[in-house]
Length: 106
Length: 187
Image (cartoon, rainbow over all chains, first blue to last red):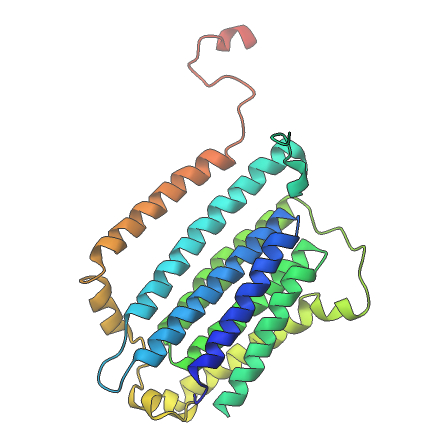
C-alpha cells in the first residue's frame, strides 16, 4: 500500500476526535462507551502506523503490533466492566442517561 | 488500487464513526461502531498487519460488539425512533455496516486467493514481507521474551476484570444468603 503514514495518522486523528466528540456530547451511557472504543481504535491505528513507518526491509518493528494487542486486551476489559456498570446503573435508576446520575450535584 | 481501497475504507470508517455519534437509537450507534471496526480491520490488512486484523475482527467485531448488542437488547433501549430525519437513514447502520463488511471480505478473499500481500500492495516493503508486517512467529517470540512481564500483568488484569464484572452485575440479594441467621425467620 503506497499510502503515506501521514494519511493513516490523519484517519486516526479524525476517528479519535469523533470519539471524543461522542464522549463529551452524548448523554446515553452506551454511546459514551462506544465512543471510548472508537478512541481506543484510533490509538491502535496510530501504533500500527508508527510500526509500519519504522519497519525496514531487514527488521520488522514489532513493538507497535504488541502494543496494539495490549490495547485490544484493555479495551475488552474496559467494555466488559463498563457494560456491567451500565447494567448496575440501570438497575438503580431505570435509565441509561448520564443526567440521571446527579446525586452529588450541589 | 490498494491506495484507492484504503481511502474508500477510510471514508467508511469515518462515516460510521460519525454515525456512532449522531444516531439517536443506541442500537444504530452500536451497528455503526461495528462497521467502523470492520473497516479498520480491512485497513490493518491492507497495511500488512494480518494478525492484528484477525484480532480486531475476533475481539472487537466479535466479542465486544456482542456484549454491546446484548446490553442494548437486555435494557430494551431500541424502541426510540424519534428525531429521525431522512438523511439520517444513511447512518442507521445497515448500509454502511454491510458496505464495510463486504469490503473487508473482498480484501480478505483477494489476499487468500493471491497468497501474498504483494498483489494488494505495491510497496516494496510490504512485498518483501509476504508474511505481513506482524507475522505470528516473530510476534510470539517478542511477546514471550521481551514483553513477558506485561503479558503476565495482562492476565492478572483479565482475572481482576472477571471478578469485578461478576461483583458489579450480580443482582442484589433481597433474601438473605443461605446459612445466615435470619433465614428461618423469613421462611
